[in-house]
Length: 272
Length: 303
Image 1 (cartoon, chains in turn cyan, yellow):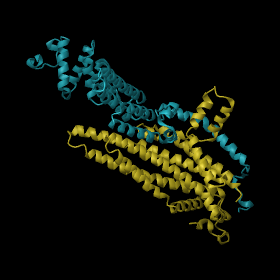
Image 2 (cartoon, chains in turn yellow, green; image 1 turned 90 degrees about the vertical axis):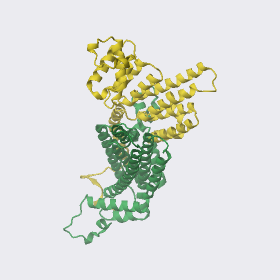
Image 3 (cartoon, chains in turn brown, blue; image 1 turned 120 degrees about the horizontal axis):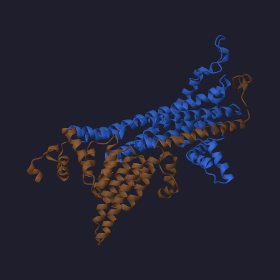
Image 4 (cartoon, chains in turn yellow, brown; image 1 turned 45 degrees about the horizontal axis):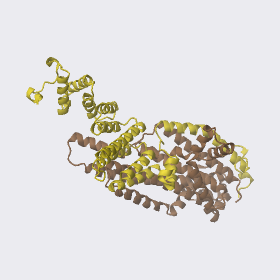
């Protein structure tokens, strides 16, 4: 045992011996860390981190064990488990179960763009088509309604995904595609493509797609023409068949004088 | 290994004065602790880790490559988190009881080794073990991820050069990001914090089981501490007794959720450097304070 000379010291002072000193030390540290911790939590949330929703509703959806695991720092693994479960539900063509799983996955991992993208795709493209071709439902109106509901679900996933990942061009790109192909709403599709085009990670084609959709949005033909004209003049790489087709159509629709037209296709082809 | 502090005092020439604080003694204790833990075959868990990540990547092989990489990253980082935490708690809980049982503690403290140095050596030994374990798991994880990435690139097939370049960029964007390193650092810090906390518990605990149980409970409460703090500080509707309880939880327990951003990092979120540094600094402060509290208790412990 250490003798008197070896008594632990801090500097020249004998360390306070009572165990309550340790309790006081921990409480003092607890009080000192309280506000910095709260501030750091706010900073992390503001940076879009730790956004996974862990509340009583989630607890009911995922069950006790998965909820505790998610709460204990294994949110991503729990989300993956439900994602894999959704894939097995897809193999069984169980769209309702898939939607439940997708809701859980996207709530647990809202920063994972892939989950939003694939959930929207399954609902708006796969489930909607399956609903339209559902032989068990004899009434066409109900089949169409079910299909529209799935498309709206897909749209919601994309809008929620964008809200959680505002800088992601891919989700806007997919939203534009959904408005264009599934809802045939060209004005909204154009808006979505323009939003994607404004982001630094946007692929080049979304600039063109935004203009194509704007050309089909009533009252915006002149704007679309100006954009397509600018793209045409920008580079020969932009002289793609669809762009030329829309430029030609708009030149005719807006009665652009021949001298001002930047693109003059073969008159016979144009007539066709 | 123990020569540094087992050398008899009488044998020491008068010219070599005893230092109050000796990094060499601490390192001798730390390396001895590390060696003891390695001899307990703790690194066998790496086999389990390897099986887990290789198995998980094979299990999701029918998914798209983005889904495969996502699952692989989530499982690997989650497994690293679990294994480092378990390693931290179990190995630290064993240290003091084992030294007392084998009488090594008495041999060491009978020499002019301050208890502070003894405890610090023990903690550093565990932290070194955790560092080695985290590094090995990271290398394994990066190796499997790289192998899968190369496999995905090889499977792209014939494409025009610009499309191929875009596809390769998409594959690479789904695999590695600098934030992964920050996430791994947080996993290590969280485990180190748990080790320091477990060491504090073991300085007054009567049994190893008690230390482990309390440490596990603190781990779980630590993950809801932020909720308790929010209710305590913001919610005016809670009763006085609840307030006292919430205040106790907020003050005594660490906020472990602060280190749980690794899930978001695996999902592709970037971690700002300022937040990374602040969170890391908080982790280091936690480790230091728990060590200090443990030292105050240990110096008064009747051995």
